[in-house]
Length: 194
Image 1: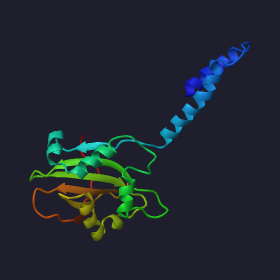
Image 2: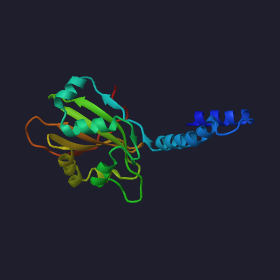
Image 3: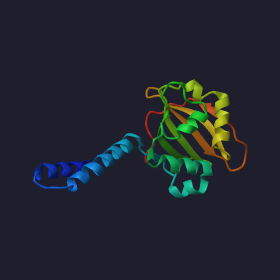
Image 4: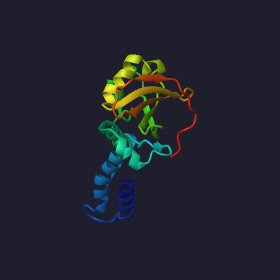
């Protein structure tokens, strides 16, 4: 859009003796709207979230253990989004994790791990500047995570980095057995390796 507008402007200034409508007029008509549309999309763009996989959490392992919900989350947040407040903005709102009048928690990364007993651990790491950790870790809300992100998973809330206000919703697949929601206060300062 900018290129079309600039070239049209240059042609307009250098072609002062021409009569009638020329290419510079078309450049102004189309160049400015294309530029404005591109600028609006860039402003409303949300970058894809990085995915960090621990050793043992290979793509094949993920494919064999994922649930439909986990797969949909990963597909949704690892692509560009436009016009939303944040990745999974409707999800955090439905879970009651948005403080009225405050900013939405921002999804920062996904982590994939393999447990010793061969289950998938899928952690959504959020930067929650305005929503307090106690709200995330409320026992009733943690139980709600299991039903919301289930079936086939247990849920727990993990404090990742208190200084950066990072909190994780950790979903662990279950291969038969009951879902059990828990809250832990494990603090880690480094990200899982890619």
